[in-house]
Image (cartoon, rainbow over all chains, first blue to last red):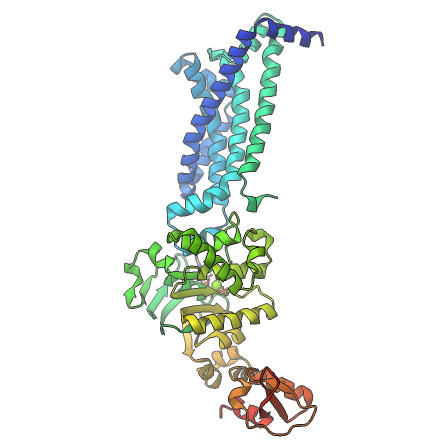
Length: 215
Length: 315
Ligand SMILES: Nc1ncnc2c1ncn2[C@@H]1O[C@H](COP(=O)(O)OP(=O)(O)OP(=O)(O)O)[C@@H](O)[C@H]1O
Ligand SMILES: [Mg+2]
């Protein structure tokens, strides 16, 4: 309890520092998630129609998934140096696999009879993707975005190691100085941010589920 | 008119062609029923016509044009297709499902809306109730009816219907068959209709093609198939009760004689009753004679058991 109070006091005493860290954390996460989505969703859509491509993409993504976040950061540093950009890059890598895997799975899981009917009625390949497959794949696709979002927000704590800033700065400093309250100033908001992200994206996921599929 | 000439389809990695040199001519405005055991190539034949699959050999002409020279997407927009598995779009409402082809063709909203209501009424689904529902809220039979409405939406001159009434209860099925015949009498579409049910084939078909292992065994009018099965396979396929089935081709009206006095307990029949049902009524009442009435109850004629015998024997 004491510790919490001390942490709270720390925030009140350093509002600008805390605000800056929180802001960086959110911007870094959003940038990484946005970039990953912009790459993985179109890639997933294209690749889903080709059995080989899909297998390859999903396997690559699965390997990517097993890499520890910290290892990714460590691997990026020698090449891209430190700061915001390499952190952005590393977190994007972290967010790619779940989005790619789910986009691909969502598109491939669409009922073959439904696609067949669409083709039989004279929809072009493009129309089938945008009017039928994508709307039906959206809940699964967005579940991937949600997973990625939570991973990125949690992973962004580690950006501090390569000078990316964010709430992780307090944690690293706290550990270095053995100052538990300062550590909590990073850890608690970071945790809350992850939980909040999961909740928010869960709500969006529900909104995106076509009414005809809601249970 | 649809002309299939030597049409063949061999799926990769199969020993036997699924469709083996089928040649059929379906005259404009007629219903051709494809019937035969499961796996005999009915669905494959249909999907070749709208080019969902490409033939391994032979040609398909639609209104005199070779379909392989036409743009597949354009071709399909002009052909109503009811798929065997229905395949409604689960994320779209019933109205939106029906509006699929009109939207692809760029109809305006007012025209599309009007058409949706028209079609829902046609398949006996109250528009106010069903327009905004989703497929998952419908029974299997209701889904099938929406599937038929969706295929009819843009009023295509050609329809491919793959077991369109398969999952519907007998009563609704009969009603939809009647309904379809009424529509067909008016719209005169060229229809390829697949069924497993010989009675349905006899009712719906101007011609019936009996398929076996990818080949046409007999292609003829229902009367001719029932009267003169081409071989033992057809004979077995049409069944021991083919005399009875023939009776379902005729109405009481076409065979009745002039009004005569009948016993009080003689059956009363409507003029559009089939002879098959009339026979059943006569047998049930142990009567030799039935009175034929118009809807207002006035006597139109009498039907004798002998008339039924004569029809069954093809006289
Ligand atoms: N995509 C495919 N690849 C390989 N073989 C196929 C394919 N589709 C159908 N076949 C085979 O072709 C044959 C004809 O199939 P088709 O679906 O045309 O039969 P059908 O007459 O419609 O049967 P049913 O009455 O069961 O619907 C069957 O032996 C089937 O196994
Ligand atoms: Mg079939």
